Structures are given as C-alpha cells and as structure tokens.
Figure (tube, rainbow, N blue to C red):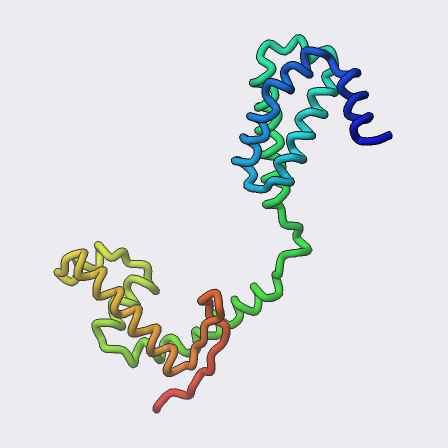
Length: 191
C-alpha cells in the first residue's frame, strides 16, 4: 500500500471532527513545535505523534470541548518528554574515572599550597587564608581590618591572581582546555 493510499485510509477511518480540527490547527501546531524544538525532523515526528494520539481517541475526540487546546497540550507534553529524554545520561556514560583523577590532582596540590601561600606578601597571604581557607566573609574581614568592603574585595581579587601566578610558577600547575587543574610538579621548599 502506498503512502497516499495509507493516508487516505487513515483519513476515511478518522472521525470527521478530528480531521476538521487537524486541518484547522496542523500548520500552527507544526510552527509551534519548530519553535520549541529547534529541530525540523523532531518537530515533524512530534506532530505525527500528536495526530496518532488524537486518532487513538477516535470518536471520543468529538467530545473534547476545545480541540485546539487539547492538541497543543499534547504537543507541549511531547516536547517536555522529549526534552527529558535528551537530558538523561545513563550512568554508564558518565566518566567517573576522570573525575576521580581530577579530584586526586587537586587534593595532592595541597602539598604546594601552604608553601606558596607563605611566599606571598603577608597582606595577600593573610586575606587568602582568612577568606578562602578559614571561611571568613569579606565583610567580616573588612570590619576586622578597618577597610571598606570594596577595598577588601579588590585586595582579595589581586591576592587570588598573585596566588594563581605563584602556583603556576612554583608548582608548574597546568590547566586543561576546561580551565581545570590537570597536573602540576611539586617542587622542594627553598629551606
């Protein structure tokens, strides 16, 4: 049976109220699906699925008070379902091993950090230890040291930049293409 004959047989077996509603709303449904999926083929597949679900209702489709609202609600639910399926990543596909390696690299970087912090100027080392290591808020640090909050934020930002440069030079810290620590070479202390 050809596609045309198949479509004609569907047309003849469908409730007339369904076919009227479909002809009235098919193009606006397709436009809406294009807009919400950004994928022409997927939009057309979902449009066909909306039609099939309407067909399954058969004559009960004629009892639906607002056919347009029903068709769009079905289309919306299909878009949501499709979105959920696309965002689902099976656990087997996750790369736990590389995450564990990354954590290991960052954890072992703690060998370098205390030494490099001590090599910074005392005011830089102090603000980094207080705010980034011991968890003091920037506001608390500002009040404790008689500084404005803006000055504290600036000092902390500059200290972080100096720490980053010092870690890069002293410990040969390298970042990967995602700007995460990938590796480093701890050096012996200068003592």
